[in-house]
Image (cartoon, rainbow, N blue to C red; front, side, top):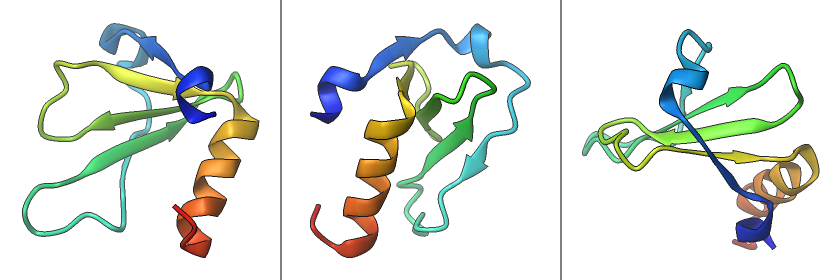
Length: 74
């Protein structure tokens, strides 16, 4: 379900976006960053290696993902 909702965004399209590092990030640099886009989509990228690009998600699949992480079902 999550893979079907994802699309790649170019790094330049998201320059200047107010990225936030995950509060679940550990001390081993295993971090991700998230930004809520004006379009309602959500973008995620790897903090330490941005070369693979950014994944963007529509609001409904993003909320399903966040809910699954919070309730421990994922």
